Image 1: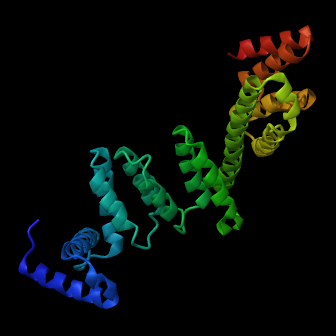
Image 2 (image 1 turned 180 degrees about the vertical axis):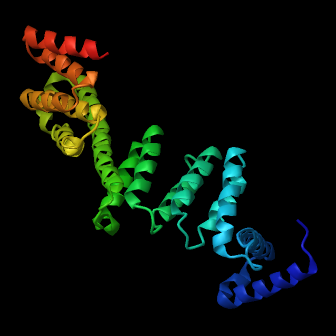
Image 3 (image 1 turned 90 degrees about the vertical axis):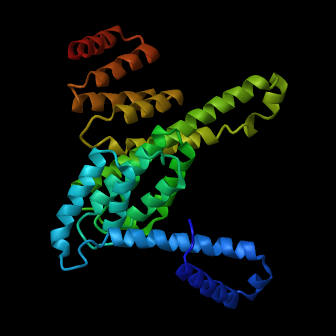
Length: 317
């Protein structure tokens, strides 16, 4: 891009200013200095483009009149897959104090994902900034981002997200909105799902180590092969996954994991009580009866119960 006379003068002034602020820069090469100033110039122009894009009402129009037009433009951009333009509109709206926080969050995330930013730092930065919007519950924003991380198989970052949320002071805010409370419960349950995945990895790693060690070495080092860690993970996972136990809803994915870990550590009766309670609350859910059938099949010889649970499950299916 050619630089006009006005830009040259501006660059000279910026150069002089930088040298005044940091005299050590004077020893640098002219090429590096010009490259830095060129970056500053391009950044300034981009900011100016965004500014003008977001101020079509500056000549007489009120914000109240402009917002509906903004939303209509945003809708058109999304429907026609003009993701870059949609992002510009989202960025412009985010600078105004309006009731568009939810729109900024939903559309901005969708645009970034459609533009192939699913694994970029840009998406993470966007989530961080959006979660600070006053009209959004931070747990709802983080829950959706957590879903995304899990679908990507990114357990490490999902775990870090959980830890950051626990440290956040905003999570202490009272949540009276039912939707926000539900999101809080789901967030806790998905934390248990992440811990469950870590538990499975720990068990797999432990079994692999046992197979590689000779019997003598195994007997000598049995207490040092991380026999405690999987159990600690399991206990934490069970606690988090069980947060949905008393809540109405279909919780197959969570409670089935609780049962798996309870049976693994010999707490069969606890698992049976959990599934019985779940089946009573969700009598029309065939899985709740199937889980009981599978439990009785693997842990007891009570034929009558197995037949009962199987018949109910088949009828519902």
